[in-house]
Structure formats: structure tokens, C-alpha cells
Length: 558
Image 1 (cartoon, rainbow, N blue to C red):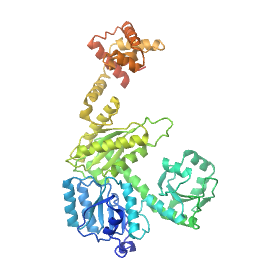
Image 2 (spheres, rainbow, N blue to C red):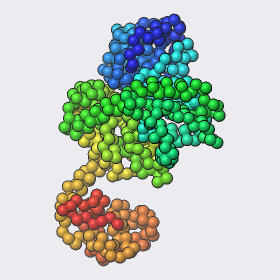
Image 3 (cartoon, rainbow, N blue to C red):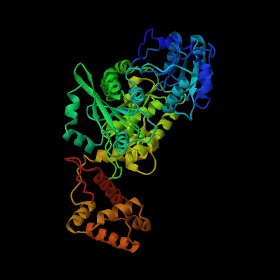
Image 4 (tube, rainbow, N blue to C red):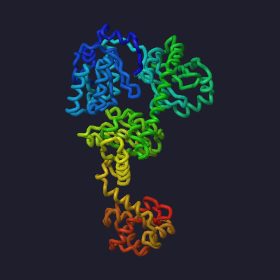
């Protein structure tokens, strides 16, 4: 949180009559559940603020929202004590807590003299922030004179109110960092930009060709473009710090109304103020990379648990586990490709919204999610719920099938690599098995893992030339349209059930029986021999995995 010192905002809570009781009466029980208020409900509330793990300074008379704090963790107790010492109006935690942790939080709150509230299950964090802000305004709180440094969404809303239009804040690559919560119908370009979280590439190319960016980065002035047909009036101003361009703030008229008469001057002033916010955004990105590097080193057994705990403010001696999440890549061809970093951000955001403390580590087409401060009494339940929720949410976002392998719960951060190994095994087995299952522990897919490990070991074995499957593969390669290897695979996969194998190949059972006769003639394979069937299945599986150089010469899959 930003240190506002002796700002008048912190002195007017009681004078305006905004108390916790008044706020709760406006917000209602649908969003907030009051657990305890040892100092009574007459405590003043000047504003709401999100707890920032990178800047955890807590100010007086604040209703502190803590989405990244697990209510069942020791960290939650620390936050409650710190809030009480700072004179906060109350602390809002997520809904997931045990009876034991609720009693511990209540005792800490009584000792600290601060109210503890919980977000209800039917109001997510994003909704709660809007509800509380609206509730404070309705209760009579004075508007904040500026958002906390780094809160780009609030900054966008503040600028929108000043200029009378919709606002997007973008980096120098035209990626959208934040946008105002304009509820009116907006123009098509704004809609496309917000949905894609970046300006469409064709629009960027057109602006670059027209020289817009060259002009924008060369001046501190506001550039203006008049409305053209359905494309509304727009303003844009670059954001700079010490001569370095950090990004830009864009304004568009909405609802057919012109922008405010002083919109250009207001935008110029806002762009100067935005420099601190964008610098904070860039700094957080650097901090995030340091945390990610420390987490990756720990999970690869070459790093320090103490270093990660220090960088990410994680408890080193509390239970943790790793989820290996396979990001969906089989979206329809007509869908636009998604930036993998967006998916990693979605994972982190969703975990935080569910009240978990996590570090997301990209791992080449998948992500490792280190989940910390788990409740020892229900850690496995927490992981299953989180894995199922992540698989469903990211599958919806990517249009592909997303699966999550669950690593075992380990007692301390130093043993996180053990959990990572099992999580990746479980994810690999889920992908190999296919089917509707999206989440699994190692013990639930142990047979598939065993087969994969056996096949992996056999890849180094050099088989004799001229095996039955090798002869079939050679025959298929020499005869166009021949499908003997595919037929054998279907027959073995269906345990010799001719009807089922024929259906899988979309052929008549008699056609399949004819092909089986050809297989025996061409390769000499004795399908009545268990050893012959086992070797054939192993070779077909090796073909699926691909041969290792110098290893078993598995025939190619047709």
C-alpha cells in the first residue's frame, strides 16, 4: 500500500460518518460475512485497499481485502495482528477456513482489536472490490484522491471520470495493461482490444505505417483524432519517466457523447501521474521474474527454499505441493493463438482468487504451480479442488483440454521438488491415457506411469531385425493404402474383440478378419501366442513414443 502520511483522507473517516456498521448495512450480507468486531461496529472506514505482498504497509481506517492470504494459514494470523496494530478498520479474508482456524483468527482479532470478515462464496474477489467501493461511496466516504501506486485499473477508472470517455493503458508493444470499467456500449475497436488484451495486429500495423507511434513517442503533447463514422473521437498521450517511454494512455468517446472540454489537459496531467504507476508495474514484473527464477531453481533441486521464501514472502516450514498443469493447445484452428504468458497469468490470478498462495513457473507448454501454506488437515482436498477448478477454467479460456497432475503434499518448501516429480508423472500419464479425466494423483494413474516407464527403458534395447511388426511396417510402406499396422494396433487395443476393433476402424468385421489373415501371411505373427502379442504391443507403443537414437528400431506409426 502507498504511504499517504498525514493525508486528510485518513482524518475524515469519522467526520463523514462512514463506519463499519454503515458500510455493512449498505453492502449487505450477500458479499461480506462479519465474524468478530472486538472494537465494535462504530470503527471508521475511510477506504478499501488490497493487501499487496510486495508492499504490505497497512494504513489506518482501511478495510483490508486479502485475496492472496489463506484464512487457514499462520500468515492470516500475522495479517490480522498487523492490521490491528496499524488501526485498520477490518480485514476481509476468503471463505475457505476450518473451524479451528476460524477460532484462531477470532482470538487474534480479539487481541489485536480489529474486525475480521469473510468474503461469501457467491461473491468473487473481483465482484467484492466493486461492491465495497460502491458501498463506501453510497455510505458517504469521500472519493480517494488517487489510486495506490501500481493499481492501474483504478487509475484507468479515475482518468475515465476526468475525461468523460473510456480509457485503456497500454505498454509500448500495444498490450493492454488496464482499462476503465465503462459499462456503456463501446466501439468495436475498444471491444477487440480489451477482449484480446492487446490492440489487434492489423491496427498496430496501420498506425505504425501512418507514423502515429513515431509522433507519439516524440512528444509530451496529447494527440487528437476526430471521430470518423462509427470510429469515435480519440486522444492519446505517451507516459514517460526520466525520458524513457513506458507506455501510453488512450481515451475514446462513448455513447455518442463528446469528451469533456478539458479532456486533453486532464489526459496530459494523468499521463504524468501515470509514470509512477507504470514504473511500479515494471518493477513488479522484475520482482516476479526473480520469484519465478528462485521457484524454478528450487523445483529443479538446485535452489534454496530460504531464498524463495524471502523473495516471495512464503512460509518455509508449512505444507506445500506442486500441480503440473498441461496448458490446452488443441484449440480450433480458427481461434486466435493465445500468448502463453496470458495463460500463466490466468493460473496465478485464479489461484489467488481462490485464496491460495502460489508461484507459477512456466515449463515449456505446461506450468508448475507451487501451492504454499496448505492446511495440514485438508491439504489433499484443497489440491483436488484447485486442480479441478484450474483445469475447467483454463480449458474454457483456451478451448483445449487442460489437465493437472497433483503432487503429494510435503511438509516444507525445501521438499517441493519431490512433489514436482510426482506431479509431472501424473500429468504425463493423464495425457497418455486421454479420456475425460482431468486431474489425478500418481497412485490413481500408476499403471499408465508404469507402462510409460517400461517403454522408456525399452527404448535403449536394440531389437533383432525382422520382427513381425517391423515386417508389417515395411509392407505398409511399400504398398499404398495398406493399413496392416493400424489394423494390428486396433485389434490388440480391443483385446482381440473383432467387432469393437472393426468399429474403431470404421470397417466391416469381415474386412477386419481378412486383414488379420493378411497380417499373419505378411509377417508370420502368431496372434495366439502371448509372447508374440506382448512384443507386438511393446513395439507399437515404442512407435508411438518415437525411437531414441541408437535404441530400439521401432517402426514408424503410419
